[in-house]
Image (cartoon, rainbow, N blue to C red; front, side):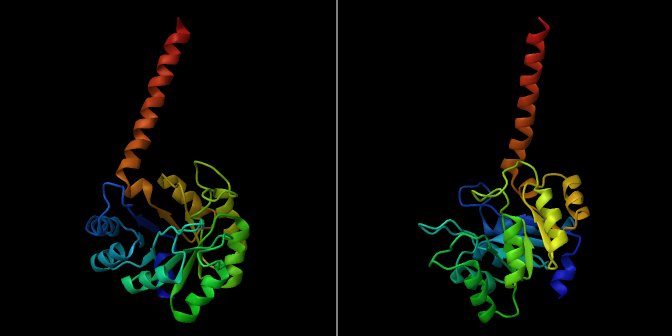
Length: 239
């Protein structure tokens, strides 16, 4: 499929801003996506009906769409029901990303149940599995997902916690599944993105390190604070 060919070995930029963030605006996210396109991104990952619509008008790149919505009593929040899937597709996304963990979704349905419903209603739409573990990645391929992404590694109670990309998960899934494996999660540098590709990732998603200035600023300021503390400790130790 052309969309998959277009993203191979490329950078997918995640352009998302939640309601409590300074850049929360379809207009701003569309301009962010345009800037990413100008910089050489091969696709955009976007959250929300209005954002996806605005980005679709602004760029020609493939869009991986999702809607983050929490339901009381349930943990999955990335496109957790068919209602959100409908909106993502109507907004103009080329690929729909959903929570593909083992956790039960609103309505007490499984990932397999939701995927079957999507494929029945939208047989020509590509569906991406956002997973958190190796076993979930294998299962996602088995039940028919078109793409698997490591998006949720470290974000479920039972997955590996780390402040670095989950290179072990990327490498193992890239070797053991035949559908495209997208590397996503805590990728901050070009070197980390290249390493993910070298380990077999089909493409790489980078979000926070490019499109969330408050987090980028925090990344720098925390490093500077650590330097100050270290220098103070060294001075004390020298007395």
